[in-house]
Length: 360
Image (cartoon, rainbow, N blue to C red; front, side, top):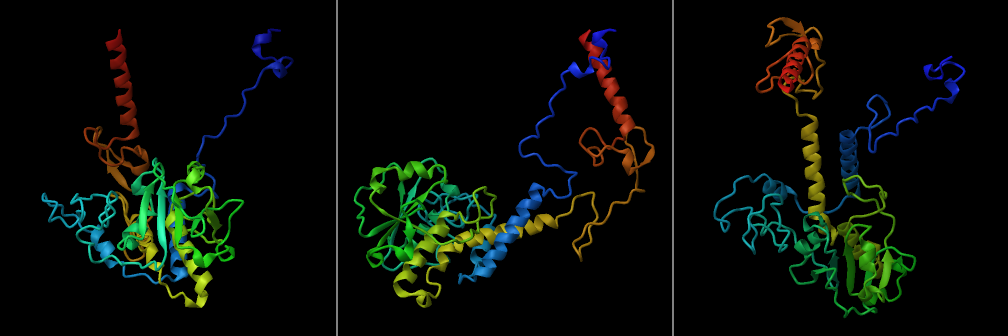
């Protein structure tokens, strides 16, 4: 018998194709246990917002921040524009609260941002030169608490070499780090150094010789309120959260926990306002209907589509059910109209025939 015919006696020698590997970040839409990415992002934001409400921070009112983001009028003269920076007079389009460049509030938020007094603590934020300032959360500390010069932002390529190991501590977990309350000479600590970088890039900053002799501390197990998905875990805090908890633990280690009454809670003011604003936008998108969908405004639930709905095709003019139309052609598109599946196939064959005649 012919061996190439795939007979039973030679079928075992035929090499089978290996199964295809699943694509990276692929989502199995048919599996009921899989959480799709939009739903995952919405659930994370809702979870972090519930955590923020549970912690009971004593924040200033968030109304000025929401009013600043509602401003849409941009004047040609930046000196009179409410969304312009106080110092450089540059109109800010994305962030209307403070300027990423000079870390000054906008004209609208000039006297409306809360001020935080750090007491006898000075803060140095070492910002990685490869990170965008718009993604940094540690810069918010200088906006809120830098009015008296106790907070400064330093580039990672220009770290000063005058740090005193007896009065300076570095907030970063390592094998040699200890908890804040167990740090020897905690009362003598007057300067806190933090690194603003991703967890991958922070290792290069830690190897700088200016930071080798500093005392290192690690914080307690706190849950982050960061609303973006991250693979490290909920115990990996944002930089502004690490700043807040480090200052608070140092204060409670010296004066005791009962002495704290929310003095530094407004360090997270802008961070929490971002979370609240994202939560509001997520809620709006969930309840936002499409053009071809019917919604019940009282309950916010989507009405089921009627399978007996009849529409007419713009090409053949026949009235057909909804299922007879292509899903991408159900709504009108410019130049095409609403076409049924049969007309789409006819136009496709005609187009292929024209291509063959043109090529010949």
